[in-house]
Image (tube, rainbow over all chains, first blue to last red; front, side, top):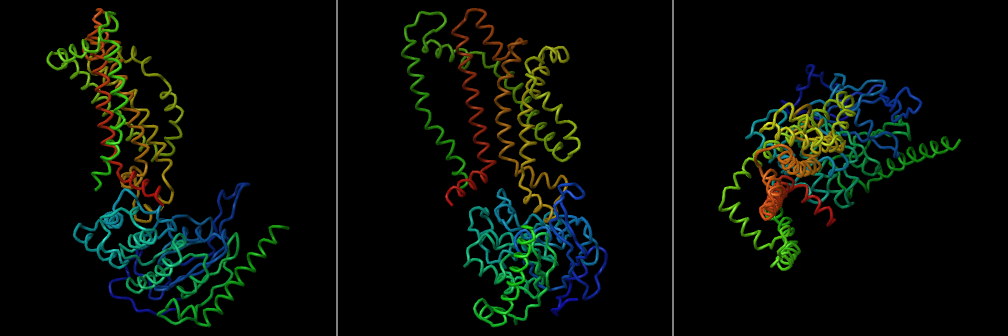
Amino acid sequence: MSRVSRSQPPGRSGAAAGGTPAAGAPVVSLHSVRKAYRAGGSAERVALGEVTFDVGRGEFVCVVGPSGAGKTTLLRCMAGLAAPTSGEARFEGAPLRRVPDQVGVVFQDYSRSLYPWLTVSRNVALPLKVRGVDRAARAARIEEVLRSVSLADVGRQYPWQLSGGMQQRVAIARALACHPELLLMDEPFASVDAQTRFELEDLILALREEFSVTVVFVTHDIDEAIYLADRIVVLSASPGTVTEIVDVALPRPRDQITSKGDERFARHREHIMSLVMSRSAAARAARRD
Amino acid sequence: MIMRQWLARPARALTGLWLFAVLAAAWWVTSAGSTSPFFPPLETILRRLYQLWFAGSAKQQLASSLAHFALGYAIAAVAGIGIGALLWSLRRVREATSPFVYFLYVLPTPVLVPAIMTIFGIGFAMKVVIIAFAAVWPTLLNTLDGMNGVDPVKLDSARVLGLSGPAMVRSVVLPAAGPQIVAGLRNSLQVSIILMVVSEIVASTGGIGYFILTAQQNFSFVDMWTGIIVLALIGTVLNLAFVLAEHWVLHWHYGARATEGKR
């Protein structure tokens, strides 16, 4: 299933509840996942149409689509935060009933997801404490992940004392603290300036190698999706369904200047842009009728 | 650094003392040489205050009042936060009890005093019960309200980090609702002081409320005024202590708000 072969470091797999997944089994598997709010009632609103795709181990998958396509809903279903109305979401083969221990999530708005009453270190320590990691191991892990996101010196500060980009780095460090199998990111760089955004994109590519983590990254920015992803799931306008899954043919390691200057980048961009634009135009026309 | 931050606000509040000083001086000047038994000179009152409350034995009245207050307020605070958190966790129970809670909340506690006296007599327990019963509501309702208002992203984050049940309440819900809970605790403090005095005026053989009432009934107006001033001083000290504690506990909240303003 996995389209990108990447060797796994020892001791990283097999921690999943329900037994060791077979090699090559998808980390996430969505089968006809559909989500409606107030389902069955007259005010039913379908947030997500039927969505089916798999994410293989070690893959970097981006989800793009026009606003209102249900990208966040899709991510919540993959995280186990929301139950699909119909269809099934599986994590390492087991149906999702709650948020699995091996999943980390980075939300869009760091000012809402970080806890302002805890210092940076304590924010990162929280998931470790929950999992019963002892004090010394906790301190070591906090230092490790904060260094990985280049924030070695801010542990004793509070998140609100940092810039937006730094706060999102803290959120990323917190999500990686327990060395998750899967990292889910919901438009994580939408609230930072362009320069910081490029830095964070490169950071996440580096972290993906360092922690050999599978990443599903939701964004409305097509350039960002092409730059980061192995595959791009293009969603249609509301209610979102999968329009196409695009394999990104760009070599790694990627680089902001050469990768984005590559002619394949331009071709992908034109293709995905036309998918998103024509679909949303069609949806608008449909709504007018 | 943080120490200085949470001391800065109370320090600023102290600069508001000038108005207090002006009014006290005006009282002193206008009451000097007064022969009215109802409005004795401030100088006389202060001398008597020192005799009674510092040199004399009236401070024993204070000890029993403050003991009632401290225990009643502590019970109200713990019960208010505890029951509030419990009701927040149990949605069904909350919905079932909500009308009843508001029914009790709008009931003025002083009208319950005769009933509480019947059950608990006129001793220590009665006063503590009156104070606790009246003071629990602001904290309870603010806790419930604050917890209902916690940002859903904070709760989602907590679930993603692996928190649930009591650990989630303790680590995320309680601190997130902290500012509102503290506002409730502050209201409860005021109510506790009021009910401390009311319970002593209604039925008591001691305490500062009893002291003020008997002084008035014995036409000892100077003594009555000393009691009122002492009560005002106690209220001020308690409030100041509360503000200090608040700024220590919620220093993150004020810090975050201050940086938000700068951006």
